[in-house]
Length: 241
Image (spheres, rainbow, N blue to C red):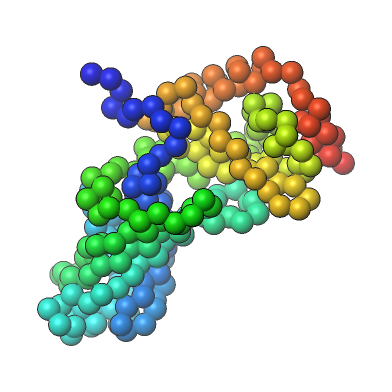
């Protein structure tokens, strides 16, 4: 048998949605009773159902009990925010439309329609694909990994920039790590006006932090064999000012 996770350039939409959900700390709920925002109030089951443990002053439990068949329609929204300060920090938004069921001590939400919005547009995800997908194995650790890379190893980010096409670095004033998953690392290239993202793909997936470290070393080895392009030299000079 091969690797549990097949090689691919980027996570599939269903996997990306589950990763957003796994890492999110807050959510907004819109139902017939109105819109409420909650922090640290949800957990996620293996099949992607969302369990909400709500404060006593929330009106959602009453709405769930009083609605016909006890299953009010609602939409849950989750934002995927980049842990490193960059322009346009929201990397994706996830919407789950479905029904609540009142359980003892919490509400259980079953999604019947899932939509994920990323920079390249909105994709509707099949509920069965969503339920069977798994979050990226690095999703829970991503925030700490990226902030450590940006704060403690800016030289590593600079070296990785050598793998970026020089045309993409034209006019760059800052390069920051934007995202990492088992398939690769994404860099945010900021210019005086606007920004762009470049993805550096691993040679094979990383299923844990130890494997991620090895994949990063491979990228750095590739970067060491690349001469510093003029665009990167200009970026470095601008950064020293």
